[in-house]
Image (cartoon, rainbow, N blue to C red; front, side):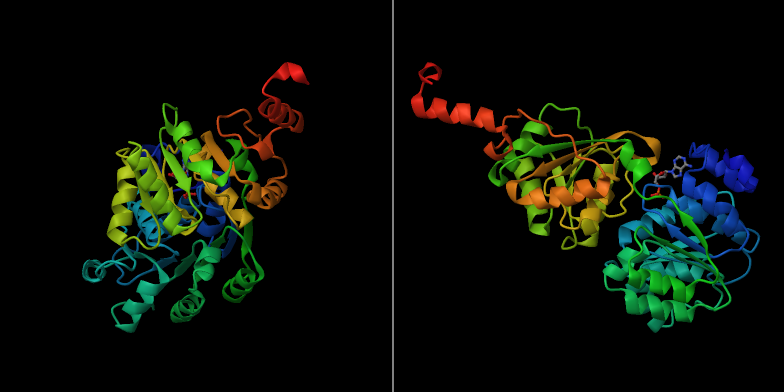
Length: 398
Ligand code: AMP
């Protein structure tokens, strides 16, 4: 199917054409017609599926023609600043011929420019819950004109402790509205919130993982914990890895990996929650522009980051939450492109690996015979032979 079949207005079609989007992704072809018809949506979809355009395009269309009415008419709540900025940029791209004005508000930066943008008049507001609550408490924002409320990455938002803010914000928006609710996962608490704020929603399920994950070439390296650093250098040096996102389990670990790489002459930057907003933003920009080819991140910092042309994801540490594995490797292989995901697995990680493989429904292919292959990963016979060689010094004696 082509975008032209979705009854999208020419102003938006033209912008999509310029982005070289010809065919809608699954979630877009499923959700856009219902949203245009005024339905509430309960969408199970992760980042990487084209979810942002699935709500941005119909919202822009529904609001087009009402640019002259004052007030925020669509509110999008999203968990992180990075996501808020990306969504804001998407609205600007798809809406550039519509005259709809979008603003983004998020914490960690001065509120003055955000206030100024609000004063100039805003049709679509993209916000993280904390900063939005701040501005609402200061009576700088009024949500009484909101007709369309979107909750993006709802599971993440609740996981980050925004549940009370989200409830309060929802109760400040008119009850007579259209609500779009997107979440990668639907644990009971998320389903309960969805049930309480949606009216007769249409369920849109883009089975999170399979389509994207299938395109990704996955490989697994068994390694001793103390050899991970060397293995990483070995893989990065003289390789085809153009743009690499490396995942660390901890913030401290992310800093250490970036430091080790820089020491070895490989440019790398780290992003995580303890870095300032400015530092995170700069790191992300440098990476997106290709100035540094390696970004080291924790799950929370990286979740939802939209980077085109990411060639590799490296799981320096396997994630403790197995679903994060899917989210992590989904950073590559975006919108139909092939990508590669490399995972390191220590002896202690074998339990996690088992769970990840069970979730994916198949084993991750193991790379054997690499220079840092640990004893625990070697076939028993080979280990035995080497042990004997070491012991007897000469093959012929046994
Ligand atoms: P999202 O899931 O919204 O983060 O989108 C993932 C990526 O897919 C982004 O880089 C989008 O620019 C891209 N994208 C979204 N929709 C399409 C489409 N219909 N055709 C090609 N690329 C798309």
